[in-house]
Amino acid sequence: MSSTAAAVESDPDTAAKIIPGPILLLGAPGVGKGTQAKELVKLWGIPQISTGDLLRANVAQGTALGNAAKDIMQHGNLVPDSLVNEMVAVRLQQPDTSIGYILDGFPRTLPQASWLDDRLGTHPEVLPVVAVSLHVDYNQLLRRITGRRNCPVCQRIYNIYSNPPLKAGFCDVEGAALAQRSDDTEEVFAERIRAYDAQTAPVVEHYREQGRFAEVDGDGQIAAIAARIVAAVRQLRK
Ligand code: AP5
Ligand code: MG
View 1 (cartoon, protein in one colour):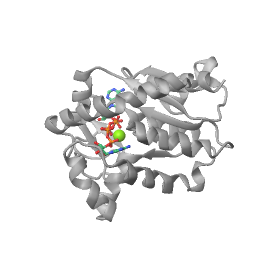
View 2: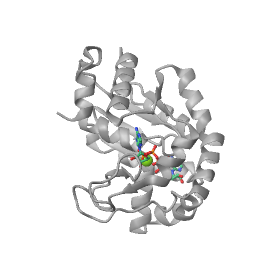
View 3: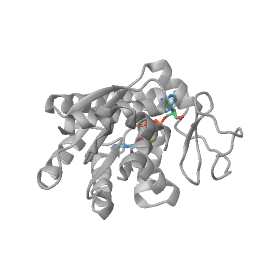
View 4: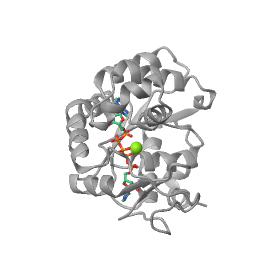
């Protein structure tokens, strides 16, 4: 049993099975959305849909979307809503989303949120979204961003300070040399935080006002945070 599964099972209140439905993971750059999404994928078997990962894949493949997004991402700004919404629409048509999915980093603007609300409104068979917003303080975010390394093969997320690989610089599973995201500099991080405060913080308030919203402390052990998210989702799905 994984440490997250153990942390969840050890709490009888959260052990009951949940039909997850659509879950939004919100929060500032580096707060742990991707890390937690991967824990929830293992627990619930539903896909992680990270708009950042999808955009980076498009950049790597040199698609028209990737070419349009590359410079914007490199400067820490947000890619236009129409492009991101279309990308998400295509992904949500995949059959693996039928019992739920984790949207990681979407919606990030109020127009994206209202696009998603409208889209889900036309699918009454789908459970309403629940939104979980993670929070850690600024210094912790900066340390997480500057220390992050990714495996280019399996996308595992490491951190040279808090979650280092067994052999420095190499993925534990693939043995591949770890990479650093080009937007993970202190300078671009400052822009990403500015974009978050101006455009994404209002999205958090939008879902807070709608209900089916929980704020979760993102500080601590990864498994313990996952257990907090599961407990919050269970409560919101009651
Ligand atoms: P995106 O890739 O979504 O970046 P982000 O929101 O800035 O978030 P990050 O991926 O940087 O952080 P995270 O919260 O996933 O943290 P992680 O788990 O990796 O977006 C990139 C760009 O794409 C945007 O700037 C924008 O240009 C564009 N874009 C994406 N979506 C868009 C949208 N919807 N609309 C428009 N544009 C969009 O963790 C970070 C580090 O912390 C890791 O090293 C990890 O190991 C470590 N860590 C995690 N948990 C813990 C813990 N509990 N304790 C200690 N360390 C931890
Ligand atoms: Mg991420």
